[in-house]
Amino acid sequence: MRQENSGAVPRHIAIIMDGNGRWAKKRFLPRLAGHKQGVESLRRCARACVERGVQVLTVFAFSSENWSRPEEEVSGLMGLLATALAKEVKQLSRDGVRLHFVGERAGLSDKVCAGLADAEKTTAHNDRLILNVCFNYGGRWDIVQAAAQLAARGEPMTEQALARAMALAHVPDPDLLIRTGGEMRVSNFLLWQLAYAELFFSSCLWPDFDEATLDEAIAVFAGRERRFGQTSEQVQQTS
Ligand code: FPP
Image (tube, rainbow, N blue to C red):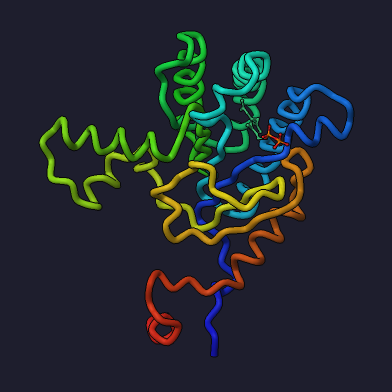
């Protein structure tokens, strides 16, 4: 009999929150209005993850490549991050969420960096959900920075050593990747850590993402057989 993921809730969910711009365009609103609504969606999603017993949520908020967007949108996203920190940290903390910001700090203003450090400190005691917000992040950047750390220490380049030097070394690899917005690609997100993640693509635009779509993704995940390179028969023997 085929052994499924037996109703398991993924320990770690990663999300590419795509579709904010299209959501806004459909409503004749500026793109930033879509991103603002995206923050609301993220808050709801974090709470839903807490309620479902997900331990880690990692989201792609600003990629290394997003700097090439129009200046107005880039500065809008920076401003939105500052506003979101000021507005959301208390509530996230009440929900038991611990924040981590993952990505290159160089290139971000001192004010933004101070805000990130402050939010991490304020939420450091929370233990219901780790929320990794990838900001100024790229999967290739992460692999290169990890390799550079090993080289600088003269440490042998092994898979384990590299994994320990990666920006998400504080959490297990994602079990499930969700991408909204209808595109089916990874877009330089968590290239190393997604090696064995199950992928779920939804046409839903990120601001419309709700508990029903999250539950659909979790149900699809639960029905998948995770083989990690083994055969189906081997997996069934060991489960
Ligand atoms: C992709 O949608 C989304 C982003 C580049 C930004 C994601 C940011 C948020 C959801 C807000 C949370 C951010 C902070 C600052 C905490 P898109 O703009 O590419 O949408 P489109 O494909 O419809 O144009």
